[in-house]
Length: 234
Ligand SMILES: C[S@@+](CC[C@H](N)C(=O)[O-])C[C@H]1O[C@@H](n2cnc3c(N)ncnc32)[C@H](O)[C@@H]1O
Image (cartoon, rainbow, N blue to C red; front, side, top):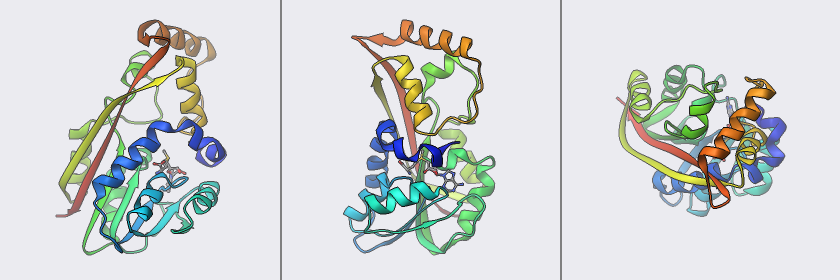
C-alpha cells in the first residue's frame, strides 16, 4: 500500500472511509475520560470523533506522514508511530481501529498479538471493509490487493484468534462518483492500491464497462460495506 506517499491527499480521496469512521466512533460507545488506543489512525477521522466524545486517546499509525497530519488535525490525542502488525503494542483497556485489519496478511495472528496486549477486562473494536464492498468493481476486475471476507469470514478470523464477538454492526451504502475513472482515482490516490495488477488496456476496458453498467443520472454508483466487531478474549 502507499499510505505514507498518499497521506497528503488521503482526506480528499477517502470520503467513504471517513464517513464510516464516524459510524464506528458511535458504535464504540466510549465513556467520558476512557483511555483508548487507536491503531492505523491515519489522518484522524476516528480519532477526532473519539476525542470530541471524551476519550483520552493514544493514536498511532505506521506512516510518519499520517502521524504528522493526524497530530495537526487532532492535537488533543497523543500521537506516535507504531507498526501494529509487527510492533509491540502498549497495554490498553480499549483498543480500536477502522480500515486497518484488512491489510494484515494473517489477520488471525495479528489479532492474537493484539489480544495479548489487552489489559485484564479489556475490549477491542476493530472495523474494516468487507464483502460486498466495491462489488461492482470486483465483478469486472478480479485482481485485488485484499482478501475479501464477508461478516461470517471475519467472525471466523476473530474466533480463530481466541476472541468472542460480543457486538457487531455492518453498514452498507452506495457512494456516488462522477465516473468510474474518478472512483479508480480515489482508490489510487487514497493509497489503498499497491503495485499495478492489470495493464492499461484492461484497466481502460474495465472503466468503460463500469460506466456502461453503473451510471445513473450522470454519476456512477459504488457499494461500500464496513463491518465493526467488538470482541473480548474467550
Ligand atoms: C484506510 S487508512 C484508515 C485511516 C483511518 N483509520 C480512517 O478511518 O480514515 C489505513 C491506515 O492504516 C495505516 N496502516 C497500514 N498498515 C499499518 C500497520 N501495519 N500498522 C499501523 N498502521 C498501518 C496506514 O498508514 C493508514 O493510515
